[in-house]
Length: 269
Image 1: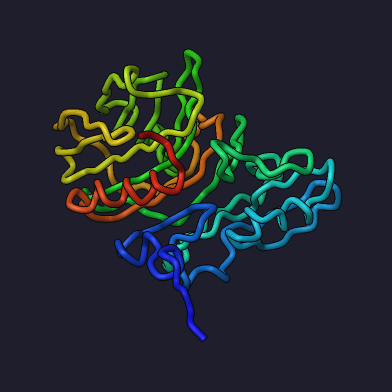
Image 2 (image 1 turned 45 degrees about the vertical axis):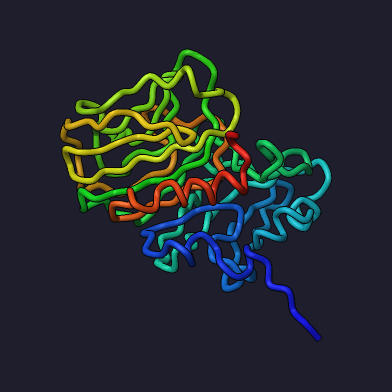
């Protein structure tokens, strides 16, 4: 008997590039070792029952069947796949993003997604106390004249606006000190976008959108805050699919990590 081990089973993204502080996705990021682990905990609205689901169960129809025809499913926990236990949680039903709508899995570009439609957000236990930060994110932005924030802070009155679009302008920083770049020529809004933000130090950082680089900025930004998914002041208002945070400079691995993500999501050529 022979066994064929596929690439996804043999090497997940976090197997090849370990060291993430937190990693949220609806696909397996740890290959074979993660295939039996839940990626989300879902609440269905008809009876408020909750259950965990693996990436395979999300994509193969098991989750939608459990939620049931005509019902809606909302994510109570987006499990951290890094092994650090930094799960993203939301216990308030009204603030939970939707993953099944009317019995149908929420998808963007053919892949499962979490739909943030205003007040939906997650709190995490991920603390940003290090100037060295690398963030890789797959989410969709609004094609309207408003800001749309994927990342924010739980514990800052000014909020930390790590990556927002206004639209077509990508920001890296907080409410008073940030770096803006005009990406309207390469962003296809209303479709998934891969955004990478890397801080080499508190005064040296760069943004890449769909593999295209901006110039390096030298404006200070804040550290010492706890991550929230979907900004308080600029809520995401659109679907999100993946978020990986490293407490380190991943410049040397950036292109390879982006290629791994893009191979799965087919975001850009």
